[in-house]
Structure formats: structure tokens, C-alpha cells
Length: 128
Image 1: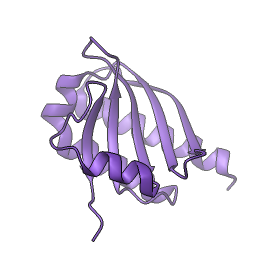
Image 2: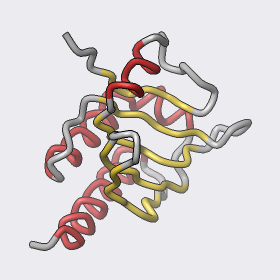
Image 3: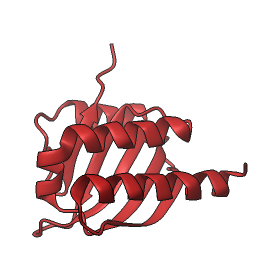
């Protein structure tokens, strides 16, 4: 299976799981694998129909689904988060990221689920 076929398969499976869990139309309009110049790499899944309240209520399930999707695409699910549209309750994307050392230090200094107004942390594994 090619990388694009694997991305398409996992995007569809995750979308179906979220729709079933939330009992409403949730659209995962795009799933991308990325590698940033800083050294971070991972997945970004652009969403429509997913809300901040959904994250709070179904966090455990969403986290589990995103972890499985990450593992299926060989991305270590050490930092899972949602990016929020500032000033709204809309979730813009779900993200699975392997942090570079600099970005790890930036996020490890923060605390809580919302270190920034546009980020909701689902899972952050601290390094030893």
C-alpha cells in the first residue's frame, strides 16, 4: 500500500469512528504527513464539525482513536493536540507530532490542557 493509500484509509476510518462516537457529522477534510524545518514531524488532520466541548467530553476516546491512527502511520503518538480556531469553539485540526528538542522545551514549560489559546493538549508524554 502506498503512503497516500494508507493516509486515505486511516483518514476514513478515523472520520467514521468520530462520527459514530459523537453521533453527528464530523468531516476530516484532509490528512497530511509533515516534516518541519525545526525537526518536528507528524500528522495534521483538518476537521469540520468538531467542537471544543467534544474534546472535553470525549477526550479519552478521541485520544485513543488518534493514537491508533498515529501508530498505523508509524508516527509516535507522544504529543497529541487539537488546534482551535481562536475566539471560537471550533476545532481546526487534530495533530500528532514528534517534537524536535526546541519545540519540546517550549511545550514542556507549559502546564494544563491549554498552554496557548489555540491549543488543547490531548496527550503529552514527557521525556525522561
